[in-house]
Image 1 (cartoon, helix red, strand yellow):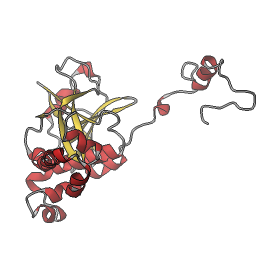
Image 2 (cartoon, one colour; image 1 turned 45 degrees about the horizontal axis):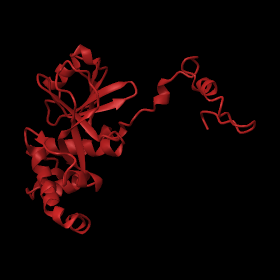
Image 3 (cartoon, helix red, strand yellow; image 1 turned 135 degrees about the vertical axis):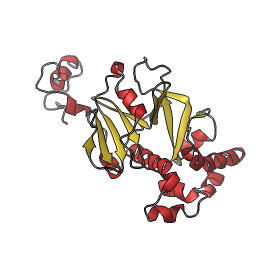
Length: 253
């Protein structure tokens, strides 16, 4: 990776890019992961373009009363590695890889698990144009990730340890009626279950992140309903450009 940076980056940018990469493992282990940085300047944009790192921007929301939207606050974000194995190899603790293979992640568990989930979300195309999003607002707290599905916005938490049912920030977020949240996912070391106090919160084992995929908006449209019948809409609004007889295209085609 270092050789690639030295080969493909502009000579004057190589040092700062490598320093930015070296900072990622330490940033993930800090209690406060928020870092004020200019997203559009080297080295972070370069790392994103080179698919070495995954940017995760804070949701653009300054007050709890504001509606939830997935627009990013570009100058406030975190960086994850696109390769979690490489992230672990970069850690200065040489025993970390050995400990992980033996099921003992220790103090680094939170940051590594977040990176694993971020890597899967990005691979499963949840990043989209803006990249991944996390949520942090005063009086609410930090939510690891926020994703969008056709049926609404879904908070996603990554919690290590046995106390995965303790999530004050998520509870405050779900209890804000103005948001109208219908579901939240907590990836943890537990089994599949619902929260005892809020059935909208679903606990899932970590490995199940591979099954979290973007839903198809067509699954939410009733083609038998006159308003939702897309074929009829197509006929009514595209009569001027209607193909010649025998060349009709259906929505399915």
